[in-house]
Length: 336
Length: 267
Ligand SMILES: Nc1ncnc2c1ncn2[C@@H]1O[C@H](COP(=O)(O)OP(=O)(O)O)[C@@H](O)[C@H]1O
Ligand SMILES: [Mg+2]
Figure (cartoon, rainbow over the protein chains, first blue to last red):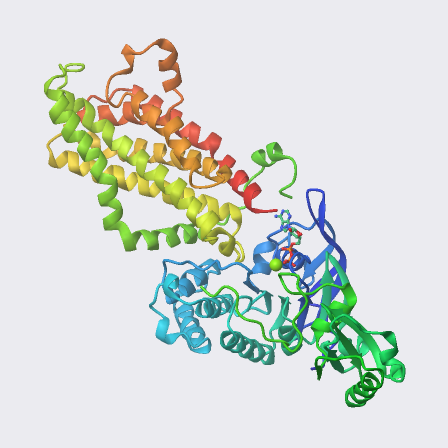
């Protein structure tokens, strides 16, 4: 999607710093989010994503640098700016005893939306988020996926021009995740600007027009999801089950095809733009020198590979390298 | 902003929008309306047991206090103490649940509501709940024939001021509470001693001067001293003194929980 760079940015961040006591969680970050785009903050736990989101809606004070939203410093007129933002925070903060509809209506009250309008929007949101059947159910009885849908619906009650989405699908099963993605895409088509944090590569690839990759409070890369893959790795990844013993001579006649390599446990991943040819050449060479290769697998490169390449660390919470042969989708961790 | 100078912040003006304070209050009221029956029953059992056991039971053995049958001495004070308990439970266990478990405060301040609005809305709700319980208990007394004067209609005023002060004190404790367990200390160190040393069960004259001085700082004592004469129809000008003292206490302490909750939540 093309973004009109002439427009004034909705969120403008320069040299942004966040400190908790002596600990620096965000170390001088720069980026701008333009109208109508979905901008991603991608990074593992502890990268500083939530800190940035919280500063953006004025919850957490800025420790250094500048942050403006709709061209204003949020600390000066926080109420006016917050009335144009919708926030989906990382924690589940729905009102558990109230019903789905009551959650929406009560939230509308905080924006001082008149009762008639609130009722109308409430019905629209229930239908948009596919929650009509559950509208009178207390939130504490809902599954994790339904709660997240309601959280997103609740953030829409003031028809925000800017949505802040802090890990909107973490912990959801694949079905629930795709449903949320679908709704977010529709909101984007309607022109809502989004700032989205995630540690799911696939989420970033699916939704973001541009993104920054963060690691330990700093930006390590920025660009379009496809562009980043192209720039760093090449389009394809060849996974080789070499079992740790991999003489360099294996690649003697394919060096010019390899754009990057990454160890993964005992195995190896090669990045290339010429996957099939590379696979053939490596296989032939392995035969010649009798190096055993347990398996070979060619797959598209993804942002996870880029991240691994840039930081030497995995994005996953447990810090383990991704398993060969498994890509994108992860199991939901904590579906309540 | 919410930086390193809490003292300066205490003297600063809070960031309040009254319509939004009211919305926060309404959110709690909506919940209260769902469970009010169970709520009220729970908070009533205790004072009614006191009334029966102490008033009608112990009262048989206790001589008159200040020329009053014991039940008439005791009952008006229980209006104030039942209100105190309703408020303190709500603003400790209840507020802590909303703040730390359900993260409701956090969700509110993502909207135009400010943290000061949230905390003041909570305090108003605690005050409302305590006052309501006081009023309902008063009607129970009327039903038992224990109300002797029309002045009793004014008893909710000192009760409300006292409930406001207990909302504030509880909220201060809640703002530093590491978990639910710590509320036991709040009750055993502060609330229960206050319950026994505020002239609810016996006049304070019998106590050593030091304890009497301490009582002056107990909101419950002033509420009891104002409510009792109103219900018995013996109101004197001293009631004004107690009211003024309660009001002053509320005004002096109101800013504290607002600052403290902000310091806890906003990092
Ligand atoms: N309130 C806080 N006090 C102290 N440290 C914090 C606080 N919040 C976050 N941090 C630390 O700041 C870093 C960044 O956290 P966060 O912004 O939550 O990252 P992310 O959302 O990317 O996981 C982490 O190391 C985290 O432990
Ligand atoms: Mg986070």
